[in-house]
Length: 161
Image (cartoon, rainbow, N blue to C red):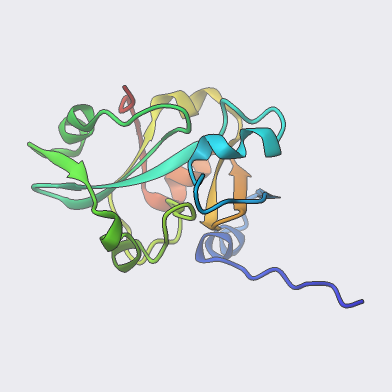
């Protein structure tokens, strides 16, 4: 029986190109439950370390990326302040793929079509490794939060509710 070849996402290609250590985590996904918390049971011990990627739009900067713990909500006022915007709102879901190259449930902060301003919630600094989307549904990657900042020119800031 032939081994199924894993398709590499833009996020994985970029991490490998920069020779950054990472671990892949595959999981089963359901169209009706695409949130980060749906993964908790499938990757044991990951509850606090799974982070979700959200894309917002600032009135000054345009698209920007927020990476926050999976069970938290994004504070749009805090994001606006740290990003130099007066107002920030979530990017419309129908614009996500055209803007980032990724779809809902598989959006990684790494390897988007363009390098957007990226902000990781400061709690990420407390972990040696966090788990983020690897760029497609059913695939997560675990790596150092500092590596994510390095790849995205990201900043650690307080942006969760």
